[in-house]
Image (cartoon, rainbow, N blue to C red; front, side):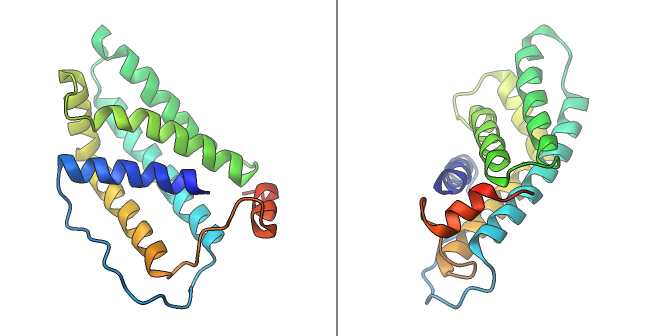
Length: 169
């Protein structure tokens, strides 16, 4: 579970370095969770997969078809396929892992400050179609975890985690 959160936290932090966002992790007293952590994480990841698919369809439609963009197009198309695969039946854990790894490996390239002109153009398209909003949602999700609103992350090997490994979505 930690790797899903870490992926989004890393990207949120990178986005904050490149373009400061008005988000802070204010320590609040722990409250009684209003939602189960696993359910919240599945719901959040499903939402992000759907938004990623919409984002990438729009970006790919506007992405130049010239040779310098071909590698970018393939990477974005693969991420789009992973986002679409999230809707197909299967084990939640496997789908979440595949999506978060794919998302991180592709998006981290576009958030580096020393990007190529193609990276910069693609980042501009990603931002135009909602990347900043998705990053803010990631930070909000992490705030909900820190505040205790959605409960504590489940430890690997715990009975809840074992159930999660077998859960279909």
